[in-house]
Length: 135
Image 1 (tube, rainbow, N blue to C red):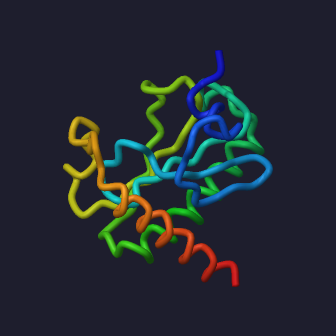
Image 2 (cartoon, rainbow, N blue to C red):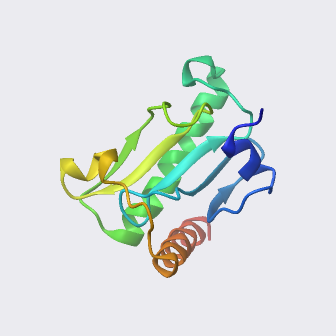
Image 3 (cartoon, helix red, strand yellow):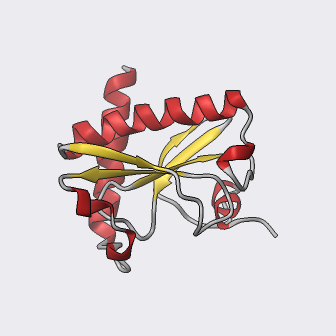
């Protein structure tokens, strides 16, 4: 059975996209720790990051770094957290979270019903910064 991320990548489920290329995508998570919390996901459904080939692992890191810089520019947090946990969805994914203090990275504090307008604005802010970097 395809993972929820595979279904999102296939267009079966909606997402607030911030990045797409031939090997990876990034979109906002539906239960963010903060507005701007994005996930970087390989297009290939690979359950564990330990099973990634070196080129895909490197590409995911590069995408995460690029998107992370856009998050930093868009939201001005003290740091952008990077974590790879892999318990909630059996498809490798990197969390990028705007952080101002360590407790901002506590997943028990995720927003269950984030404001849709703020989510759309967050996605657009990241895309705007990504366009600025690419221009």
